[in-house]
Image (tube, rainbow, N blue to C red; front, side, top):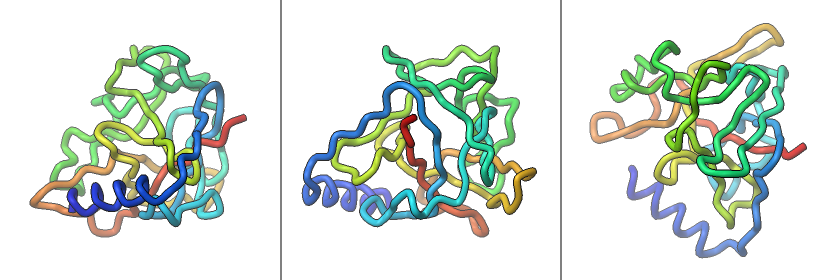
Length: 177
């Protein structure tokens, strides 16, 4: 699976004219229902991230990206991370015991592990993390303005080559404001 994703990524970069992606300053993060770098677009949006980093139908927060290393994101609630062990783990995933939902909180000190980036060559500024991982995992899709769902990093391995059964693989789109 990892080789397939990597091969698809290399093919995308090799066949797409370099499109400069600006993820500086402030923006909103939209959740895109897609598993394809080439076919995903903002039109595939199924919600956005709220001020605490949760997946919401329409309660979209403004995120600010640090201009300097480690180029992390924050909201008015604080710095954002997948590394907060007080947040729900992705227990449906074989590898999810140390994969915590994305959260933004005032007392969290961000580090380089929290850095998000995009890749020139994408059609849109999709946010990636880690080693060319531009996908995320959601268990439920909010269906109203009061529901908030956790979002986890997409993790997989030989014992589980995709997202857990019943979950949805998504991407994040940065809409600069």
